[in-house]
Length: 459
Image (cartoon, rainbow, N blue to C red; front, side, top):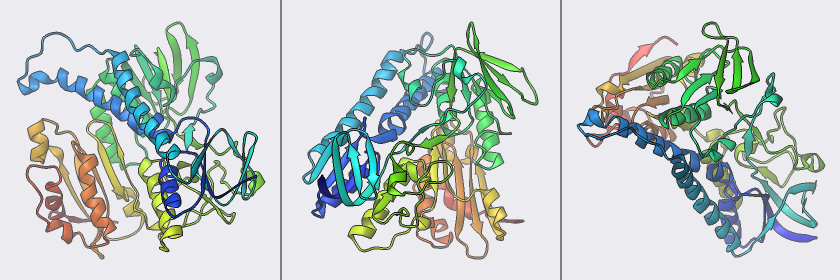
């Protein structure tokens, strides 16, 4: 039996930083990683996909060169092998860095293999048995493969396997109109593929407000992406050209034939083969580990961080989980998960930055509301870049004067949204941001203007 102060399972975004804090406090840490260091973000998420998004944006901008008075002879050509090699390099460098960081960390012992609980404070890795008074689970998640009719009869891609493509698909059909599906859809359209999105719900990005969803749909239609919403019944079947995707929509053809199909309908946690039942660790009906406000599980001495706890599928939420746990255990603080203000970005072009409540959620809360909105066509920075699609919107509680939420769909929206996120975290009235002097010309400088034009709306 190998005894440690702490065991960390999974090298995603929360675990390595937590190991640094724990070993820095003098603890002996066992780190267990099954395969690739760095988790989803490094290997199949943010880093490779946003690298691909950057390549796709470059292709898009070249095609628009004439709009800026720049003459380019000939058609835009995509070398998908070079595009992929660049994304692979970015991911590989980050993965290597994480592994090197852990292996060289004083007080940290790395174990390669599959971790399984043998009890509430004991974990096995192959022939090794490790015990510790504290165990932290950071195992992430993976793509859901839905049980669609015909799913076992056709080849399909997920967000992981699509990264292995060396060629641009002739026609990519994306099943799912959420964030992952949208990013890959626009990316491959800009690489030159025909793209069709099939979404079961009535609109894209169903968790966003309708005006945001409608604007994204219009952006995609302008780029030649076919959008099929209201696809209540989706089925797959082999076809001599690839895969036939049958849909039961209120309009349009009953089937679309594509060379490739990407499944992007959600995520599931990597918790089904950890032996959690032997430790008595509770999970919900979807397999996410149940945690309290401090990210502790129902078993004393066991915590769950990152995507596997169901409180965020993002790198930044996982890292914030680490910050909460480290502050509470090592610094005597009392940070709470419930104090976190939700925020995310969707890396289509233009990007969407979102924080706090949607307008729909704010209405449902029954509060008296103020709302401010401005199209990006009235933002000088966007006009100068000739990237004027989208809008910004802010929702405020009329009584407390505090911002409840905001969306910026537009150039720089993923960065500008942090002005609002920071003022919300400060828990101060919106006037603090309204009276700030921002730099011109930026997207952020229009946020105080929007706040100065707030109007009441019925809740």
